[in-house]
Image 1 (tube, rainbow, N blue to C red):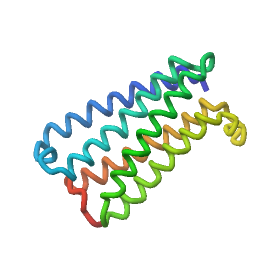
Image 2: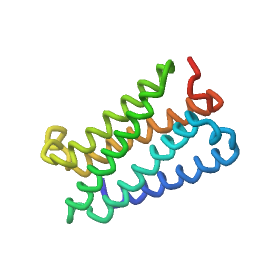
Image 3: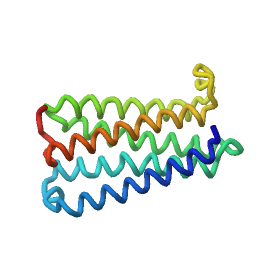
Length: 161
């Protein structure tokens, strides 16, 4: 895998998803009037923005300067984990969203751990930056699932299915 190419495409895709999400939000102005919905909308925004930023830092640091991407991954993952846990606390009865948010929080924590202790990646026989890439892919899959659930629930954070 060419890590530089992966992160260039990954970051671009995530930023495109941020833009698409804002287009959706603009067509649902009522979402921004309700505090709980506004939090979910912001959480979805961060679900695409934080991985996009991680991808940029991975490109800047690459394999030559791993401290750059490692530090960024740790900081951004801590932010992502904290925001995700805050959303999880307000998830109420929707079991799908509870599991999705718990999985996302766990992934953010694992991304931070591998950033702090890159030698852990040898257990999966990959370079640390590759291990992080795989976890970021799963994080984006989870974000897509959240968007789908949110859109299918017509923007109601407390939909119970």
